[in-house]
Structures are given as structure tokens and as C-alpha cells.
Length: 344
Image: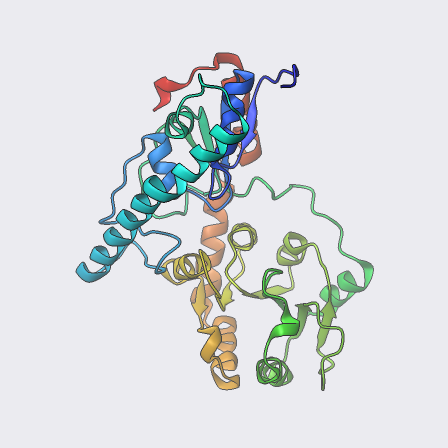
């Protein structure tokens, strides 16, 4: 019931936040949607974009590439249809009920109409290196917008460790969603024993405070500015869980990858590393000391991985305007014109 007014509603129209679209009706303001995981099935529906299941893999299901067999295409199509069926018959009706219960304005359009009236979607994709796919003009890829041209300085001890790694440094980080302290001890031992055999240094970002038998070539850090570490000239390999933001950062840096995905879009992201020839995928749940060591040494010594990574870096950096400038332009475009149905 507030009389406050706003010119723009900025939201992430992703499960489970779709009901927030009601604020566009409340404030008579257009919506700019940000899609943090990149373009997905529901965004295509909201935007009026083509859903070509024959060659566009569902990024949250099986981790397929765009080179699918007939059976993989069938599974991809079924996954897409089931997602849309759930979305329209179960998920959106729940959000419609929330709007009726708490907003209580009989003139409010249905949740489907509110979402279909989203002005533009800023999607966390890098179009230059993604799988070829159509984008209607109201879908704006801005992947990599978070990477600043001015790198965050590394802590002094980390900077010195990187500078001293003349033979190379491996950056090892499995993200923050699955903390390292819940890993089985045999996994930690496999990591440590592998690092002992390597002639290069290893910077390990982890929440672990004490690691038994930690070799001298390994440094543990609770936090580091990841883009700055990856951009350091001595960084030769990134061991990652396959998160999307990490993918954009390592693409920008031009560093090869060994990936151990856990769930969700990580399977899709890691499949994309292999598709581009910049990385090696390992199954985290069956990893062994031997398989981990083999993957690392292969990625370090096979020049094709580094050459492909550097090629991707050049493609990512070669854009007519930066992703952030593109985002700013299109947000201001919506503010200037308000109605963007002509972009659908």
C-alpha cells in the first residue's frame, strides 16, 4: 500500500521468484530480468524465443552438448516438455495463489501475462563461445560482466606465492556451495597425494584449516580474488567444480581446466569445456589418485588445451562493447522507451 514509485523493476524471474513480477503492476514499471544461470527453458518461454530441443541442450538436466545422438535428443525433448509441464501446471499456479493472497488487487494480470511482459532479459551467457542458438532481441547476453578490467589485488602472501611459482601454479577451487570439510577423508588424501607428485605449486582455496601431510608446494587460502589468480601469468591450470561464473573467468584468462562437477548446470558447463577442447572432465564420485594425477598432467603437458584456452580468451575479449556497457545500454533503453514488445 506504499505510495513509493519506481521507474524500473529489476528481478531474477527464476524458480522460485516469479511472483515478484507483480511489482511491475504495482509500480506501473517495466521489468528487466537477470538470468544468473544463463538462458534456460523458462526464459525462452517468457521472451518468445525459439525452443529447438533438437540441438539446444537443457543446461540443468543431463549435461549434453549440442552434438546429441537420437536418443539424447529424445531425452532432451522429454526433459524440456516435463519442465514446461511442471512450470505451467504446478509452479506458476502456486505463485498466482501467492499474488492473490498478498497483493489482493483484482485488476492484476495473471502471473503468465506478467512474466510475458518482461521488457528484456540480461542473460549470463557469452554469445561468442556458447552453443549456436537463436536469441530474440529482448534477450541480451552479458556473460562476464562481473569481470573488471581493474583486477582486485591479491593478498600479499598469495601474490608472493604466485610470483614464486616460476614452474607454474595450479589453482584448485571447488566453489563454496559444497564445502571441503564434508568431503570423505579419502578424497582429501587423493588430492594431497596427487599434489605431492607435481613439480608445480598448488594454490588451494578451501575452508579446511588443517590438512594432514600437506606438501610444501601447496598453499591453502580461505579466500582469494579468483579472476586475479587466474589472470596471473604463472597460473597454468584451473581445477574447478564447473560453476558458471568460474567458467567465464577462466575463459577470460585463457587457462586450461580439469573439472569435477557435482550437480545442476555444472554438468553442462563441464561438458562445454570438453566440447571446446579446453578441459578434462572427471567424475567426482569415482575419482582416484591415479585418475586425478593423469588428468592434471595431461592438461598441463598437452599443448592443445592451452592453445584452445588462449583462442577462447581472444574470442571472449573481442566484443564491440563490454558486457557491462551492453547491460547499461539496454537498461537505459528500457527506461527511455518503456514498452519493448517490438523486441519479442
